[in-house]
Length: 362
Picture 1 (cartoon, rainbow, N blue to C red):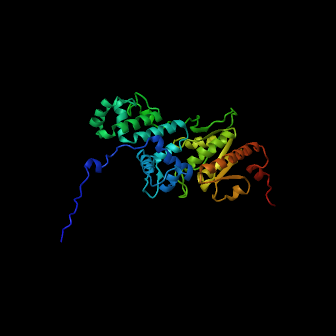
Picture 2 (picture 1 turned 120 degrees about the vertical axis):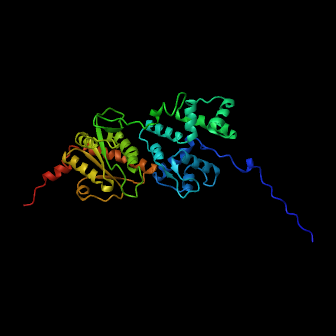
Picture 3 (picture 1 turned 135 degrees about the vertical axis):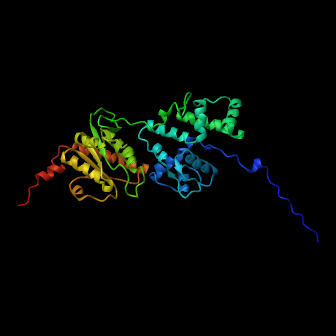
């Protein structure tokens, strides 16, 4: 009986069998932004299955392209989870980017995302900005100072330069010397520490003050819900209605209560979001109603009605999903609601006038 020869299994060369690990995202920050933006624009900022995220960015969830894109978003600190996770969700840093109320704050949040990658931070600091030397000199430094495998030098250099170009980082930038650029800029405030969210195209001189919950209490609402309502719905609708739109500074200032009271008493119009029937908002609403000054009431659909309010005043309801298409539908309708509240300011049908004109039963 002939014995069969068993072919020996040969092990591949270690350099072929083991892929060199990259200490940086394989996609640029600009590309990685597609993931958090897809979650924000298509799912209201809530955690989303990777298959849905992939579909929203025009990729198949099983492809390497989506794997690297999701990984890049995670490595920049914008999202949690990857292609093989149950969900991909926004991080606090990711929300700071996609829900930024101004271009300056968005740029600051994006720079923080770049510096979230350790090797990008170190190289920026080492070379004092984006101007890298020629590869024959750069390569030695990348190997000696940052232990970067030579096979990755060209790719790293390209990605590093593309990221710096996207963020407008040039020569002279260092983590230490330019730390001011990494701070989230303070929004402009009036003398009472109120935040200016939007200004009308025409100088009408009108000012409206928005009151709403600072944080989400109900589990159905994702973190950042009210910030998004403020930024994407109230601010642009108020601006289109001809108002400068302000709200109270949400950074825990000691004078926040004085700010709110002064604005409630002095603003030409107040927009009050009654979503979640927040006690603070209801108290502030009472102060404004007592002054018998114009107010525009809004709330997310599904909010429980308030007997004393719903029976006497009109409340505009917006879609709480906050999808881009829903916001685009609600925004012009809210603009008209705000205009109507202002145009009817001299009506005899205000809350206080109705109550004062009612005679007590004998």
